[in-house]
Amino acid sequence: MYNGVNKIKSFTSLNAWKNAHEVVLLVYKITKGFPAEERFCLIDQMRRCAISVTSNIAEGFSRQSAKEKKQFYYIALGSTTELQNQLLVTKDIGYINQATFKDLAEKTVVVHKLLNGLIKSSRSYSKP
Image 1 (cartoon, one colour):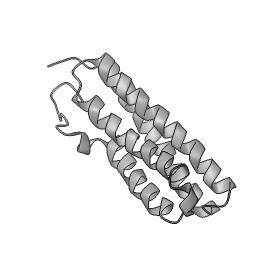
Image 2: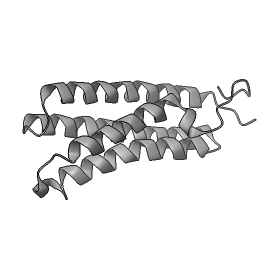
Image 3: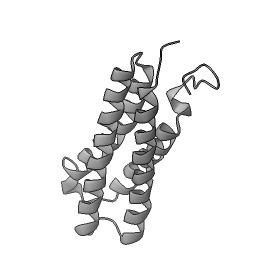
Image 4: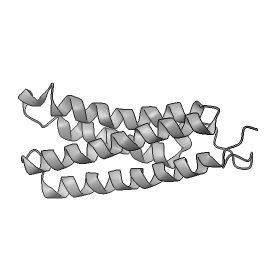
């Protein structure tokens, strides 16, 4: 990916970002239906987590060294795991049904795997 052949020129072309962006949109959609008292708790927390994933992928993409890239991809990975926990809470307290939970949880697993791939590929990154 980084050897100049088929080089990705924008973070928006990364599969990890594309899938994470889809998660962001779904999180915004489902949290619209949460009770008003969750406005400054779960709604805010879940949205911040989801956005953190895509933002850190974008920032990591623009970094020049493998160490910096990995740092931001690891932060995105942590935010993905945090969101997975919050999804479990929202399901368990009845804010989302099992089908919505399953769909979104599966999408976060895909993002998690794609981020691990980015982390592994950034280890072999060499500046052109």
